Image 1 (cartoon, rainbow, N blue to C red):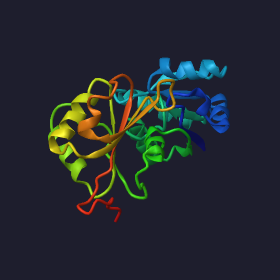
Image 2 (image 1 turned 90 degrees about the vertical axis):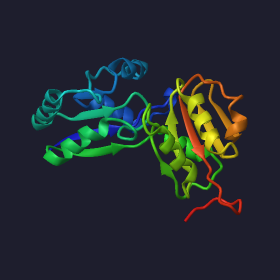
Image 3 (image 1 turned 90 degrees about the horizontal axis):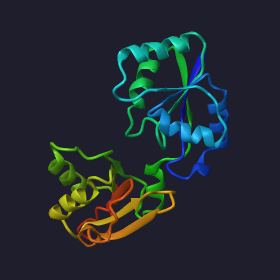
Length: 228
């Protein structure tokens, strides 16, 4: 049976990719990419010449059928996102679900970099239990999103883009400006920055350029983190 490899790729520093991931990307018949241009930068850096094809959230059913046929024909494929681990706040999970349902290939993880795990590891908050919410809604239900994030019993992690990071922190501050947060900017990249403090205080300090991971500590009334 063919194999669909779910391959984690660097979130910034190209040196973070595993030797196993490189071996898989070299050996498969085709690499499915969120954006072939982004993936090509990584492949060129390591001299990998495996063919690539785009697969993203707007891919049509016809493309899924083509992928299924490749697997039926005995081809081994790798799925990568632009950065990090596919399937986490990423459209790759839809393809994985479809392949699993049809039982046309083994689905195998090649673990590695993840902005979620990287941010959690440097937060300094107890992370034995936490909630991951992906990206906030762009328009509707934003207030509800941040209210639920601020009232969670456990630390909350969410991603945000450079275009909306300040807006999101302002909305959090309007709910409770004393919320203790960690904001990770451009993790593993040249201008990596980790901001720590109360959300109301950090608003004036954050450089809104780059990709962001935000962690809310969510302290209880007694001043200690609730980790049930």
